[in-house]
Image 1 (cartoon, rainbow, N blue to C red):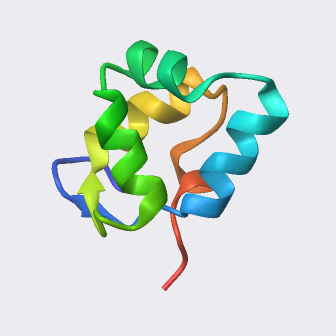
Image 2 (cartoon, rainbow, N blue to C red):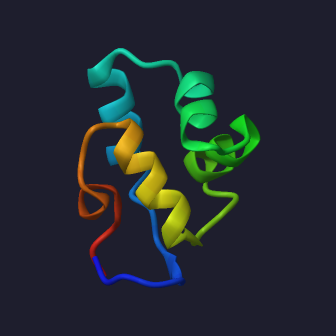
Length: 74
């Protein structure tokens, strides 16, 4: 993923799968990534199409993966 501020399209299904595979709880993941649990819910429900790259990078760090694994390919 390119560096800098911007917005990316999260892969909701992949993020949910990784959280489930790791045995994490959504609220814990949100807290550790510095996100509000409602923000994560909006990502999963499709209420938010694009997210800040910085938020996705923090989420990837918590999920022990690379940010590129969490985005949808165009």
